[in-house]
Amino acid sequence: MRILFFLLFFTSSLVYSQNYDAALAEEYFKNGEFEKALISYKKLYKNNSSSLTYIYKLVKTHQQLEQYKEVDTFLKALIQNKNYPPLTIELGYNYALQNDSITANTYYNKAISTIKDTPGYASTIGRTFENLSLLDHAITAYTTAMEVNPEFNFNMQLARIYGEQGDIKNMFTKYIEFGAENTTYLNNIKREFSTFISEDKDQENNKILRLILLKKIQESPDVLWNEMLSWLFIQQKEYNKAFAQEKAIYKREMESLDRIEELAKIAFNQKENDIAKSIFTYIIDNTQNLDLKINAHYNILNIKTQEATTKEYDAIAQEYEQLLSEYGGLLSALDLKIAYGHFLAFYLKQTDKAIAFLKDTLKSNASKQKIAEIKLELGDILVLEEKFNEALIYYTQIQRSLKNSTIAQEARFKVAKTSYYKGDFKWAESQLKVLQASTSQLTANDALDLKLLIGDNKLEDSLQLGLKRYAKADLLQFQNRNDEAIALLNDILNQHQSEAIIPQALLKQAQLFQIKKQYDKALVNYQRIITEYSDGILADDAIYGMALVYDRYLDQPEKAKSYYENLLFNHQDSIFFVEARKRFRALRGDAIQ
Image (cartoon, rainbow, N blue to C red):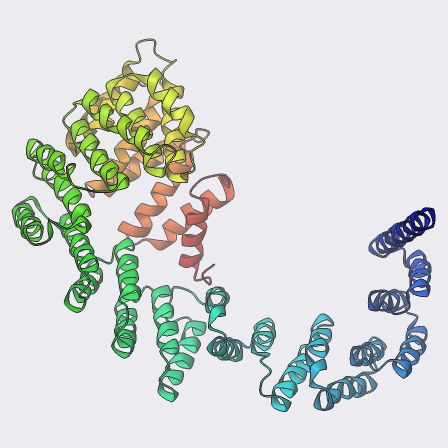
């Protein structure tokens, strides 16, 4: 037992000593103390002459000291005793460092030639060339291996090398060829592609990829090429063209409409309502799945509602009623029912009818989650009617029923917002404090914004008149009484000129002006925040607001770009930073990141 103990102690001490010496040698090398590093690596190599790590470190250290003859002698002796082609490459590179490219290439080619007899060395040989930045030789090595053994697939390595060389066409081609045999890597390949293409379909790289994929479609009828081409069209925001590819895939496979539904959602989120409606209509016409059909109807009505004038509301209500008469008995129609209740209250102003309808819907044999969603809508309608206490009951029931869920956190935020509307700022703050740790980032951000608004303004005025009036304006906006909200905000701006509520009122009013498409007025408010409150917490909101107005609504990309750039350089901690960077790069014509 004692002998075993001493053996273990001796072994562990030896391992510790070697690790310490290796770390010391590496530190010497990093600090440019190559003579000391050489002594350490010689000692390490002597104790472990089979270690490739120490062999390479010795070679690199000698080369840093320009001791090329020592490297030559050392490597040749090793090669004589050990048939390991990467050492032959290192020997060639040693000649290259002495500007002897002829001898260097001789050794490089000798290493590559071993692949024909021993293809298993291909990966190591190629990687050694890559590590030495000898990319053309790496290409030759990988290509030779694939010719010798067609089962090898080094297309991923080749694609990466071509990308480094700027050979975009070959890079795309090799990635695609690799993806064809390894479909699990397709998402990784798309991520690689996204660093080389942009939203601009006329950008050269986009054209190259499109032509490669079109050629593949002509050569072989694999839906993979249609999928990749659809993905490219989506990046270019050409949703009609993506839809054409998705229809071709569906007609070939006749399996699932999931991809087409996902495309419809993307188009809808990008405000491309016409094409989104076309895609949802296609789903309705081609599916036997009632859940999918009802969801498509739901989305079409949502789009129609967003686009409708007040004169068109009755026709939309009739569509809801017709659909509910057909599908209303199905649990999958619950989202449609909630949307109908919302439409009755917020658009037709028939709040009593909406409340009665949703209360009746609560009687359905739905899941806790769906019941919570119905109660959430009921609470919102009661807030619309300023029946705050009854609304709070529904929101609180959701919190108790589904503790710690996302919808429970949303309900807690609505409790805080309702209390804020009532002027009960103390209770609102207590709820918001809990929500700052919310797992839902959106809820946490909204909670923080409201908490800061209350905290910054409640102490300045003991009666909190400015904050109460601002909360009322906020409620008017929720009730879609935007003209009244703008007028009340004007009163705040005129009567509370020295208070912290002013930049908040300016921002809220600017956002309302945008809703009413009064973009010039919105810009005036944003500019005032930037000029008069440049050190305030809303400066980045105003800068981003200016950028969006010029970008999305006034079609002035150069002005938009200048404001995005301002935000990127001066407000790097802004929540708008990531989106601003994306839009700035898109306007500048950079590749998508």
